[in-house]
Image (tube, rainbow, N blue to C red; front, side, top):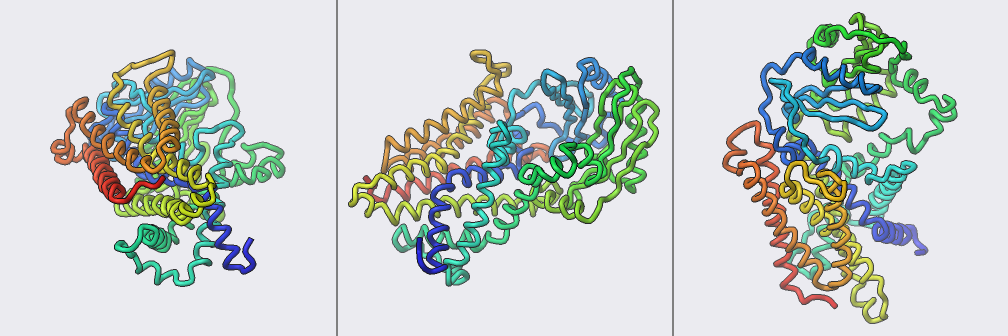
Length: 506
């Protein structure tokens, strides 16, 4: 440990980054992709590439699905209403045997073909906050630990850079690679510093009930419902265990909109469908504001009588919902959405260049001393950075390659896509350790190959080429995805060519 404060901060910054760079890169990469998770859904689920109608189907036409969910003893039934980003109905209910999800045409109400994929909203986005490790909420704890480490890196990075703002204007691309890497690290760090701190801190605050479970476990004796009722004014009531009918959903939505001065709902939920004490909850849309909307109107499902109205929230809850809305970016503002995406990529660059600088500055000394530290860290870095991109692109490619209804050894199409992602990612680590000095170039070559392959396969399997997708407004998300893939291929090609000019390190 260094004797001076600045030296100690440098030691802390270095080793926190080296140990957690791979995990932090994965979290930032998946979070960046999640900014456009619904657009990725549209690309990976061709049946959902629909135009948003001016007048979607009345909700009462969905009542047969509510009856179907009641027959399976579902605890709730919900429907997400069509929007520009998701122009179809998404109906879901949870049965004792697991969740059921269906997508419906917004005009006819007909069920769309099973997408056979978890796509962006159900795979990439959950990976961002729980790594798909649900046992004892271990994934959420790992992400929280990484988030605290990111805050430590931001603060210690400011301390160790005496000329913080001067470094921002110094990008010496014509100097030695180590100097260029450090300059790029500094630029990405200074330019994105406020965003990186705010997005990391807000992510930690969102999961306060996980990290500070004593809030409801001790103060409310483990009763989550009591905590929710007092803190968030949540409404619920017990089942009557008697069969009941369902009044008009459209009339309930109309009454809710009147109380919201005409604002539209985002989703409708039926709790305990089929029960005489079932409750219909209409939730207000929040795409016109940063703060996540807290307004919910609860109705008696049988009579349509208003039981509870939540308008606004207490100051602390309002602040909490603003922080959540800032992080989750569900508001309708494309300029800000692209800004989030760019700053998220800058976070990825910051993390990757930090690891690369550590490797480049120690490579020669470790080789002279016969140490294996650089070899191990480089394999982890290649697999965590280039390898994760290769696995993500393989996820997109196999999505376009697998036929509908594909299955293997009892695993469905969605599971096969996920297995492909993890197996390819694992293989990139093995490749990185087996090909020192060549792994970066070869994996960048894989990225440059897979990205345009995904674009070509999308065209071959759906007929949606760039000329068509950029010419039709409802296909812009698909065209945007193709353009981003081609940009990734171009950047990977440029980086690989740049690395080939350097002598491979042993």
